[in-house]
Length: 119
View 1 (cartoon, rainbow, N blue to C red):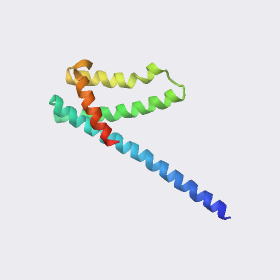
View 2 (tube, rainbow, N blue to C red):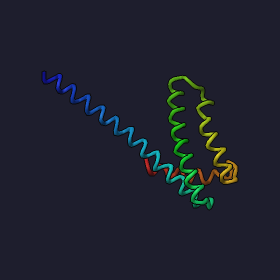
View 3 (cartoon, rainbow, N blue to C red):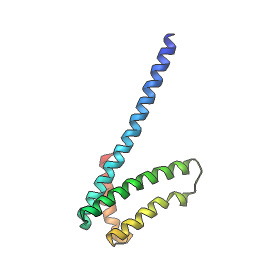
View 4 (cartoon, one colour):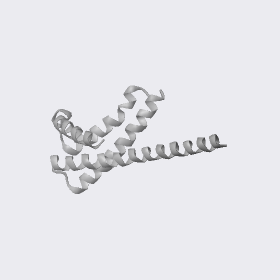
């Protein structure tokens, strides 16, 4: 009887901690998107509306990346298909800033250093 109760308690704690870690991932995604949008707004003199749109696109980008990684790990999509969410966001960001990848590379490096601090 004690073993059964202990097993049930262990399962409840495990499920609860998993639910919290999933929640933390979502919260982190929103925070990283916020920082990304704020840094881009300062760097490229974006309007408040552009910053909000960039934030929404970045949140969606993180979600698309996560789903693509899950599908890739299951063997449902190829490596090239996995990269499609990055390409889509890259095209959007290039159009928003009016710059190409080479011109944006210093910004990407700077923002990646800042986002690494959040993890």
